Image (cartoon, rainbow, N blue to C red):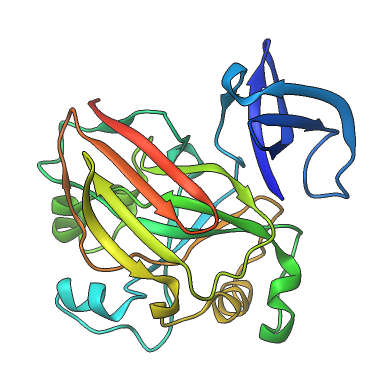
Length: 252
C-alpha cells in the first residue's frame, strides 16, 4: 500500500495511491485504514511530505564505502544525529541552498516511518513499529559539517530533509537498489543490503535512548558517491519498490 499526504481543493488529507488516482482515507494512517469514498486523479493533487515527524533520527556512516570516502570506518555502534522537523519538505519542493555554505551535498537514503509510540523495542519486535518506507535526501552543508565538528547546523537548515513521494507499507527493505541522479546523471548506485547496522537493530538502538512517536522518521545512511549540488540543479533519489523523490536546488 502506498500512503500519501496531499492537498486538494484547499484541504490536506492522507490517501492511498492506486494507479494514477488517490483514494482519501479518514484521519491518519497510524490507525486501521478506512476510506472516505473520496477519490481524485494524482494529476489534480499536490503531494506533500508523507509525514510531519516530531523528529528525524539519522544515522551517519552506515555504508562501508561511504565511511571510507569520508575518511573513516563504520562506527561500532550506530552514529545518531537529529534533523529538525522544519527541515522536511516534499518531493517537488525546492532545496534552498544557504549563502553561508560553499558546498551543499546530496545524500540519498532509505527512510523508515514509525507507526506507533515506542520505547525500548527489542530487535526481534522492531518491525512491529514500522509503518513503511520512503525516499529521503539527507542534504548536508559539507563545509559546515567539517568546520563545526558536529552536524546540527550542517544538517538542519530548512529544506534539508526532502521526503517522499509516499510511504510504501508492503516492502522488504533488506535488499533494494538505491540510486541518486544529479541532472539525470547517475551519482550514487548501491543496495540497501550494504547497510551495516540494519533496520531492526537501528530501531532497537534508537529506542533504547529515546521515545519514537507515530510519524517519526529514521534515515538509515547514505551509500558512496555523495557530491555537491549547485543552484539550478535537479536531484533525484530513487529506491526500488518505492519511487522517485525529486527536488530542484535554488538559492535561499
